[in-house]
Length: 552
Image (tube, rainbow, N blue to C red; front, side):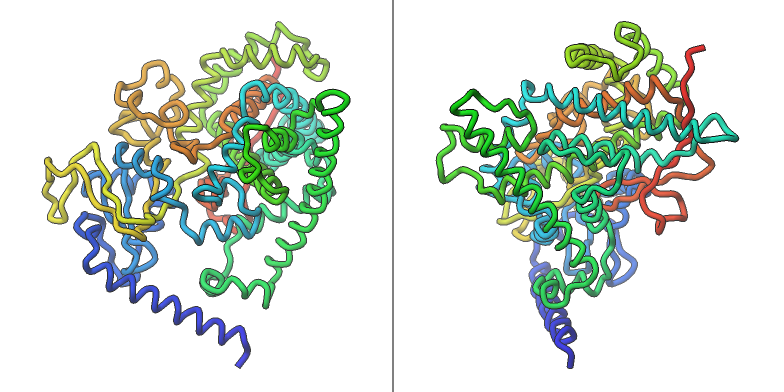
């Protein structure tokens, strides 16, 4: 019998034993005292209801009406009872207690296999050590160079789209997949801001490091066959013994990235070392800032990061930073195309400051770019549109945690009993060790009880008069969960906002965006991505009709 089948049988037996052990344990699991939606089949589950953005907003609303804000849902099977909470006090407790509630090992193993053990997959003291070294790199005083990079790459994107429009012989507009181009732009920005490396992918797709990152992105969002995924969950050595095309792609990509990034790390270290003798090296990319922070005298030697840790975190910034930012910009352009009056209002506000600067943005000096960015940050409607888009379609739809020990969780709202009665006096519940917890970022952002009956609508003006209950939500950014919350909240918030607002200014003062005849729908594939309805197999895309803006 071939070895792969033997390994497969072993994996299935291990999986079955795990399921049986868990199933027996569930009989006394106090989580089962919570109410939750029924399932119609023995192997039925609620994963699509809570993970698919096409249906999750309605599902969450119905679930809360029927079962309250703290409920039990089914995961992979009858042995997999999970917790779903839309209670803000419970949510805060869970995301703040990172020692007790950690990411599932399956997620961490997958992330680590692609980009290494950076802040996205690390837990405990490893995560704390990495975050301590990395946070100074994202301080406000270190963001100056990012503004200039974002403007330069935004101008390059503008020129690429202008050329596409000019090439149209029968129309004054071009059908452009804005997702593809914006993704290249944010990857270019992250390359320069991350480790001072220019992919130049807006104009050229042949750079070996760009190809390596692109291929790894595609692997991350591809769906592996279920049988192999099951095997890999319990027997990851299969990848080494029987590598398939996906495994070989990841290996080749990582070899390229390690070779180039390793060389860059050594070059940066040399420049920093030489700067100690002849004057400080002024590199402002994240790699340089990480290396400087890592060498700071207040960091004990045993707390410093290895070169492998540094590389893993640069990879993390590349993946998490470029992909989330590109999707945020893409969804905003899509929403503005759907709402032309809002698009016109935003463009008018942006044009109101444009006359203060040279008409050709490519001629702006660095000081003028900084002044323009400061001006943009003060524009109220731009800020409202940015926040509203991030609220309505958060790139990170939801997340998972696993309880590493039994834990009592407080609640703000009373808990429903399984018979449907409301226990007004019960304001806490026990989460047993091993319980998977769903953190529904999107559901909090779209909660009609918090944001009002128009919570599912794109309404930037809501930010001028927020309900009092919204202002009581202690999340990381503007009372929304798009950037998560707690110790694992996104450290690149300021970085992302600079990039987004810069691109909005450049694109909306030069172009008009309209919908095509295609229906664009969201799908949660690692992140919330746009796809054409009925054409999922064609991959991520968001085509819009783009024409030049003329003030006359």
